[in-house]
Length: 80
Image 1 (cartoon, rainbow, N blue to C red):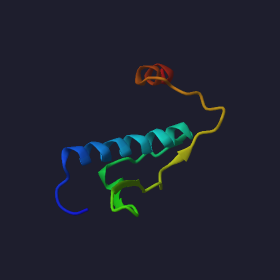
Image 2 (cartoon, rainbow, N blue to C red):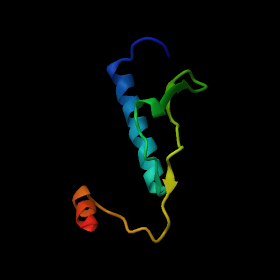
Image 3 (cartoon, rainbow, N blue to C red):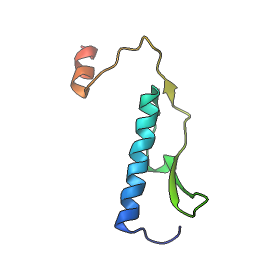
Image 4 (cartoon, rainbow, N blue to C red):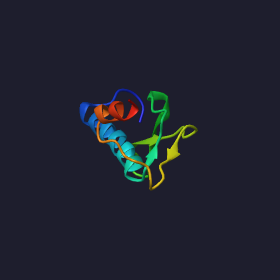
């Protein structure tokens, strides 16, 4: 799709961005370089716009023994 997106289309694209990051984190993958340039918009077979996440050059997959942090505060506490 070319041109401006409607608010509904913007909302759908934003949800796709959130879902892509959620998918990575559920699979214990940290992208580590998410920025606007990492996202691409393509069209599916139906002509609908879909978000693709790329640029995985800094990505890592966490090992099973990785101690997860639930909040930024916990991360900072662990560094002390």
